[in-house]
Image (cartoon, rainbow, N blue to C red):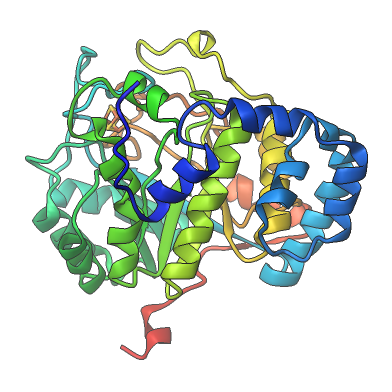
Length: 387
Ligand code: SF4
């Protein structure tokens, strides 16, 4: 396991003190020993505010018997805070060239397949297809293709998309505060950057080389994004790499830390589970989590964070996604393609991972309505800031 320097600060300090950065055996024992009385006490004090002890009780095996009750409470809290609405967004993949070799990813630089990167003009055409489908919330996604997908490229693309999309967010490699500030000025209002796993040893194993191999640098990314007042910061752990209960606690600590420090930014949590991809066999991951555990994670977080966004992608199957509509999700993708150029080409070749819900955005928006919710294609406009 990589050596941990004693001189730490911020979120890293918090994770070390909690024992959440390395194995967490003691914490796992505490989680195992939670009683039904502890869970009931935690549920009596549900006010949507975070406490480590409360979350620890709600993600315990003892809380599984209370899952239905927790889901109902999560639904009530979400409707109170967000209304009966679900934001729809679409990812736009820009490149599949990558300088990293993350062992869980189809774009791993060691995998051989026909890679593709889009020019700004090609990306604009893909975005036009999404705009015609009704999307006004777009997420620009790219592998770490720094030679091509750099700050100038994204600023130029954002300039072309600003009139068609009311919200432009990015999920790309890690950058500096100065670079995030340039994005913000260009009209990009959200950045998602997942730690993948908060466990230092597992992080080193799954990220053997490349710029992303630096655990500490990645952990500091939330600060770089928060410092520029970015409107939305998306956090997440890739579920399957480490124990989901420890990852939930670490994710919560990370979100709580950023919320206290960067009040201008709205925090959201995502729940990506490992999916099959080119040379990625799901069965090889020892910490895969079940549908029931995923639901427990999501509703436990909602009961501790009434105001965070909970985000779900098309990695999940239709049945589960339909169920999650009514219990806490606030932003969800639909009709997604995970290969660059995927909206204008019929081929699925070169995907980052295989999606599990192939319904179109229109079909899915009808499902949202059938569940008594409204699909919101646009809920933000930079005009709200008086620009
Ligand atoms: S997860 Fe991201 S950085 Fe890692 S190999 Fe895949 S695209 Fe590259």
